[in-house]
Length: 107
Ligand SMILES: [Zn+2]
Ligand SMILES: [Zn+2]
Image (cartoon, rainbow, N blue to C red):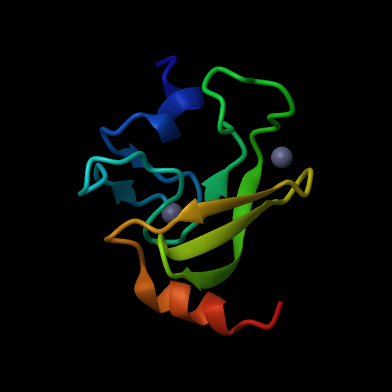
């Protein structure tokens, strides 16, 4: 299996490395960049496909959620290892209870 490093970009579902749940493909046909159950992400890819620089492969933890008028909810992830932050759009089947929790945390 050589697809592991790229699994986040592949819209065929994957098994989350954090909560071990089976994640189905994105319902709207977009790319998953985080787990819909635990909302964890991984520091694997950037905005530029194939760009492997500065990619450490560590967990990226959701630190807060905010509402965006144009894009819906935005989740901010922070890499546990290098501190890199990423803003990600929320998928339609993401865990809303968790997202609401994160939006109440002062930041
Ligand atoms: Zn998960
Ligand atoms: Zn990192």
